Image 1 (cartoon, helix red, strand yellow):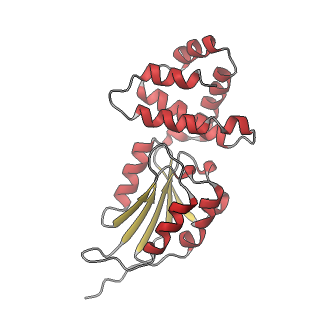
Image 2 (tube, one colour):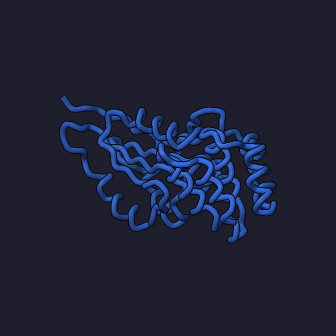
Image 3 (cartoon, helix red, strand yellow):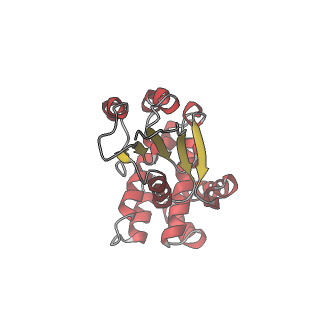
Amino acid sequence: MAVILTLVPSILIHGGTPKTREEKAKEILLDHYIYRLGEEGKRISIEEIREILPHLHLLPQKPWNKKGILITESQRMNPEAQNAILKTLEEHPPFLTFVLTAPSTRLLLPTVVSRCLIEMVNERSSNEENEEEFALAQKIFGATAGQRLAIFEDKVGYEQQAINTFLNALEIGLAGKMDVNFTQLLPQIWRTKKLLQNPSANLKLTVDQLLLSW
């Protein structure tokens, strides 16, 4: 008996942490054969997008009835790469589910966001909280090197969750800046996030290196 599939809209998951966003995405794609892009700490290139797109339109092989494409931390796509997925986001085959994750919808092109069903993981990435955290980040990076460490320790601290919240807000805030000097800090933030995923990472040393790099 043939399986009748209903077209599922493309989904953009934001809020929470990289881990909770990915967990939510995997729940959605539980019964799918998954193609995945978004190696931690690296930009997602237009070449990677072009390489994978043709495979998404081919029927899934047994025992799978559905395919999924998961692009984690999709804000790492440059505008050219984001534009390359627009048609597939809007007009994909019924057996394909397209899922993106990002800290905030503001980190992606409006044309990408408008083609997706938006799902928020939790309340931790509300605009108000992000704005407060980014204001604190501006204060920290506007201080002298020695003052940065003292302010961070006093206002944020070196617990994992507090650091993640701070880095997410900093990434979101910087992505909205037109100043090239600010946006050059983004790869350093991504590198810091990757290092912090290592359970043996020294949280203070890793974060302090970022704070002193600017």
